Image (cartoon, rainbow, N blue to C red; front, side):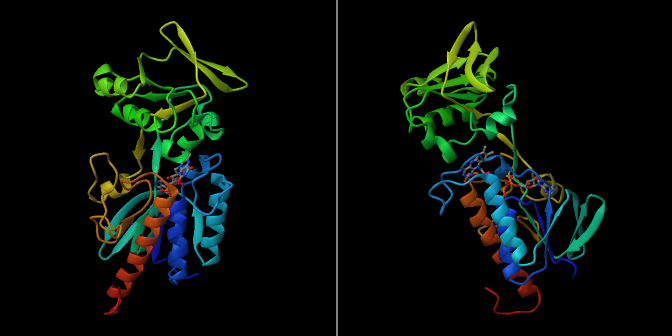
Length: 302
Ligand SMILES: Cc1cc2nc3c(=O)[nH]c(=O)nc-3n(C[C@H](O)[C@H](O)[C@H](O)COP(=O)(O)OP(=O)(O)OC[C@H]3O[C@@H](n4cnc5c(N)ncnc54)[C@H](O)[C@@H]3O)c2cc1C
C-alpha cells in the first residue's frame, strides 16, 4: 500500500465522511481511530436525514466505516499523540509510529462533562439522561424535564426546552454567580432550584427522582447541560487559532489558521450535530483535494 498523503484524526461522522470523499477523489487516506466517537452514544436518532424510523449511533458509524473502506480508506485504531511541522509536511506520532503527510483533517470531536450521577454512562446510552436538546428535545414534548446546569448554558437549554414543555425545572449546581438569567427563567415559567444534588433515586437503574435540600422530585427526563471540552490540543500545540470556547476557528473551507491543517465536526464551533459534521467534512475534503492539486501545479483547481 502506498504511503498516505492525508491523515484524518478521528473516526466519527466527520472523519469517516471526509474519508469517503477523499477516497472518491482517489487520495490515499489514513484514518486514526481513537475509539468511542460521541456518535456511538446515540441510542436512537430521529433527526438523521434519510432515516424516518430513526437509527442508532453504532449503526450510523458502521455504515460510514463500510462506505469509507469501499473507497480505500485505511482505518486503523490509534491515538495521534502529536502533530509537528517538518518543511512542507505535517508529521504525526500515532501510538509511537511517525507518519509524514501533506494534509491533516482534525475530526476529534469533544468530550462531554457528565453529571456526577451513579451509572450515568449507561443512563446516557439508554436516553434516560440526555445531553442534546437539539437532537431529541422533540421526544420530550409535554414531559416533566429537569435541566442540570452550572452556568448560563443551563439557562439557555432550559429556555430552549420551553419549545416542548411547560414543565421545565433548571437545577443549578454551580456557584450562584454563574447563573445570571434568573429573572428570564421566571418570565418563561421555568422553576429554578439552586442547590447541590444530594441524591438520586433509581429504579431498575433508571433515574426516577432527584433529591436536594430535603426535597425529592420526580421527572420524566433529565438533561445535562454541563458542557463539553473540545479535543483541540493537537491543533493548539501547532499554533492554530481557537475560539473563546476552545473550539477551532476555520475559514469557509474548514481550513484552520495553520497551513495544511483542516478541521470539521464538533471540534469546530457549531451545532454539535451529525448533519453539520458531515457537511463540514465534505467541504474540508474537497478543499484539501483542490489545495493539493494546486500544489501539484494544476492551475484550474477550483
Ligand atoms: C447521547 C448523544 C446523543 C446524540 N444524538 C444526536 C442526534 O440524535 N442527532 C445528531 O445529529 N447528533 C447527535 N449527537 C451529536 C453527535 O454525536 C455529534 O455531533 C457527532 O458525533 C460529531 O461527530 P464528530 O465526528 O465531530 O465527533 P465524534 O463523533 O465525537 O468523533 C470524534 C473521534 O475523534 C477521536 N479522537 C479524538 N482525539 C483523537 C486523537 N488524538 N487521535 C485519534 N482519534 C482521536 C475520538 O476518539 C472520536 O472517536 C448526540 C451525541 C450524544 C453524546
